[in-house]
Image (cartoon, rainbow, N blue to C red; front, top):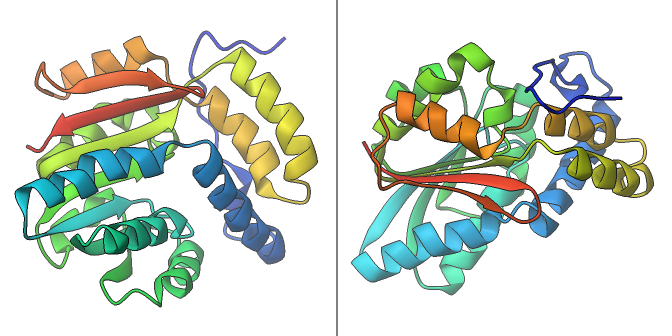
Length: 236
């Protein structure tokens, strides 16, 4: 029996530099479907970025750290355009293959660019970032680095930081296994997705990490269905 009492941390197959290129390409498509159907990221960005900028007026800069295949940024570009909100979008990813894939996806949007880099490259961003978000990235961070990672991201965000990730749950694992076995054949989204759930978080763990990172008492740390944990904090 697998235990979900403690978070595990292991490398995922699609992170390997020599993983199958065609399988990786399919995985980006499957992960985009997961983001659209299950992640809740679109609603979070609509509420905490698009509506916020519409209320304040003007334009704003937005960074996605760990942008992967670029599907979330592309959706944000479309939704903000329809809302008449001007955003300057930057995707940052440490994997050159993800950068290439995201760059192709975002090519139609003149207000979006993709750069290669990670948490250590934030000082080299083209401009200060009003909003910073990451989706399914925090579980990729080693346990010892979670608190410094949170602290660094919040300092980069001038207005708001949004972090969306997976809740560690035996039920979520079982249901995802059944879904992915059918929907995500020949894709890293099956094995890596199951591992990602085991690398996810429980709400008290995130509350403790945010407290250690110096987040203000007013920040939101909450669960969202299906099995999501979300942090929304004012910028540092």
